[in-house]
Amino acid sequence: MLNDFRQFQFALARHLRDPLGAPAPVTVQAAQASACTQDMVAHLCDVLAPAFPVTQALLGDDLWEHAVRLFLKDAPSHAPWASAVQRAFVDHVCESPEMQNLPAWLQDLAHFEWLQSAVSTTPVTWPAFNATGNTMHHAVVLNPTHVEAAYEWPVYGINTDHKPDDMQSTYVSMLRDPQDELHVLESSVFRGQLLDLLREGQTGEQAFMVLAMWLSHPEPEAFVREGAQVMAQLQREGVVLGTRI
Image (tube, rainbow, N blue to C red; front, side):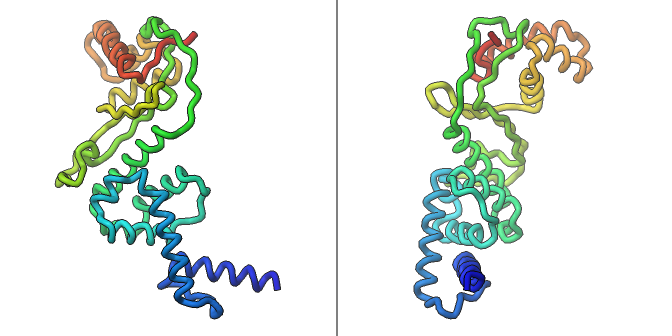
C-alpha cells in the first residue's frame, strides 16, 4: 500500500511539472491538476521575478511564463530557498536546449541580474581593518561582498529600450557597501588579476611586481609606483576596505 501511494505521488508530481509530457494518475481530475500546476507556476514567478526584472520585461508575460514552465518541467530538485531557486533558474536558462531559441544575450543578462540580487541579499560579516593603512606595503582586506564577473554581451546597457546586436566583452565588479547599497563598476582582466593576487594576501607592491613580470613591463619599478593610484581607487570604490590589522 505504501509503495502504491509513493508511486501515485511521483506520478502526480511528474504530471504537475509536465502536464503535456506526463499523464496524470487515473484518479486525478484534469481541472484540479491544471489548477495546481498554475498555482505552482504562479508561485515560481513570484520567487523569480524580484531577481530578474529586466529579463521578465524583455521576454513579455507570455514568454516569461513559458520559460518558467520549462524550468518547472526540466529543472532538478533544488533547495527551497529563493536564492537557490533563482540560481537554478540561471543554470536552466544557460543549459536547457529549449532555452537556446531565446536571444543569445539572455543568458548573460539573467546571470547579471541574479548576481546583483545575490550580492544585495547574501548575509555577510564585515571584517576588521585599518582604513588608513598603506595598501602598497601591507596585505589588504577586501570587501567580503565583492565579486568579479565577465560576460560576452554588454549587460550594462540591456533594457526594454535597447537590445544589443553585437557581442562585446564586458567585465564588472559588483559589491555592496556597509550601508547595503549595491555598486556595479566597470572592470577588466587586469583588475581581476590584481584582485586575485590581493585576495591571496599579497601587498599592493608585491601584486604589481607580479603583474609587471607577467606583462614583461619595460619599467617595472615605475609600474609599481603607478600602482599606488590604482590601489587608492579600489579603496575609494569600496573594493579594498583597508589593510589587515
